[in-house]
Length: 118
Length: 115
Image 1 (cartoon, chains in turn red, green):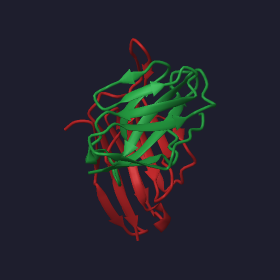
Image 2 (tube, chains in turn blue, brown; image 1 turned 90 degrees about the horizontal axis):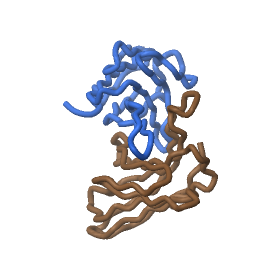
Image 3 (cartoon, helix red, strand yellow; image 1 turned 120 degrees about the horizontal axis):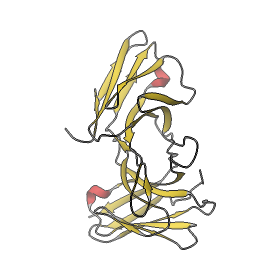
Image 4 (spheres, chains in turn orange, purple; image 1 turned 60 degrees about the horizontal axis):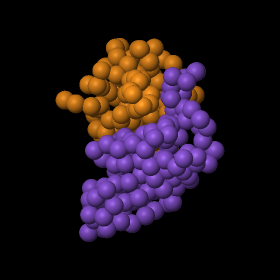
């Protein structure tokens, strides 16, 4: 397996369910991200983990709970979601590094989990 | 991060070069130009990035003007699979003081490659 993988690819859940999204990166990166992409809206950054510590939380409701047990894995635990939370949830990873001509901390994205909340 | 302006859509014939423009007239000296693309309902795919110099990789070339106020992404031989929304993003790298992890995606350019 290469790059960034996400499971499940599709998820339908009721408002009272609890589910988790999983992300795994096989790139040896030290930072991982959760983004949300709603229909016809730009990508929204939700959480950032750097070296397994949460470094950014962009005012995300507490019904979304991230977990980063190690540098390769990232989870998003979901509970009591609302229909407006239906969206494509994307995971990304990055590693800051210098090359001869420039610094790079490029974020590489997974395929996403399409979530539908009924 | 500096704001970018891209045309909402472009067409290109298969096999021809696709040249996608981006204006970023308020870019500051420590901001990089990144290009991503997103094929419908898939995760964004990194294409290329640069600071001042032109860059080339196996996917594309990036031409940045000398004043850095605009750039052009070039796909040398477009294929049908290159049909996607292309995003031009300018951002400060995360090493430049403070944390700057956010990628701000605008509306991008829908490139349609026609047979």
